[in-house]
Image 1 (cartoon, rainbow, N blue to C red):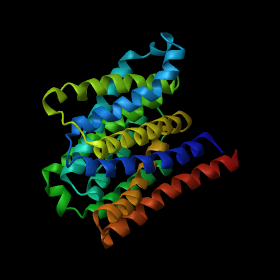
Image 2 (cartoon, rainbow, N blue to C red; image 1 turned 135 degrees about the horizontal axis):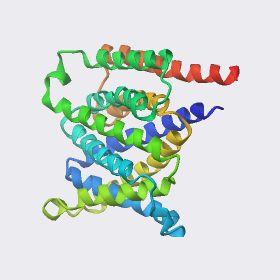
Image 3 (tube, rainbow, N blue to C red; image 1 turned 135 degrees about the vertical axis):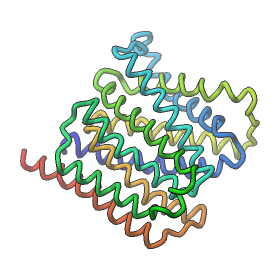
Image 4 (cartoon, rainbow, N blue to C red; image 1 turned 90 degrees about the horizontal axis):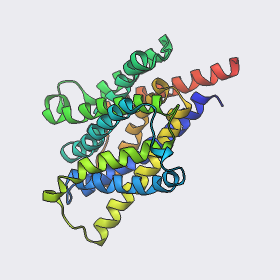
Length: 287
């Protein structure tokens, strides 16, 4: 497989894991503050990256691009906190769908910041996929007239900044270095407000918070691997698969039944992602 094809497959796995985590967050947010959920998640990320970081300490914490690290961490904090906040105030499918704006932002940032070749086929697939999102959302109804809809869109921009920076950093930094910096900075930003917001979890709540952290950590490691292998504008397009996962989880956990608009939009979105994958396979065969 080409690097882009491998990146696509890993990105689909990461999207599935993150969809499960965000569904769990929708449950957890009924009892715990967004910052507490985020804090637990970053603690698990830190512990997972600690062995690798410790073996090469202090070189493992040295960065050739501290400015890009800082930009990425700001984007990550915005994306992670907004993602949890969004599912607290919006239906799971609505929050997930609006978060797809990340794909559009990534395509623009990849063209401007990474200087990646974004050809007509790729641009067309991104546009068609985003039109699928519009179909799902039915302009003028529900999400777009709700100010809460700006939360996942804001988070999508933060995620796009983080993804684009990771693509740049992954060429020179290890995955452990990327995750340990994120866990320390984002964990600290989330931890400080807990002086006032902390709520001691019971056993079930603790297991839920830890499970979210473990699954999110696995998803992040896989996501970094996908970005290390594939171009950001290609890998980012696989974010659309989260709509399918969200529809399944929404029905199973929250009794959300997708309507005709959601099904039509999903078909457009899946077709967009499948077209990108098909193009990568054709390019590989041609080479």
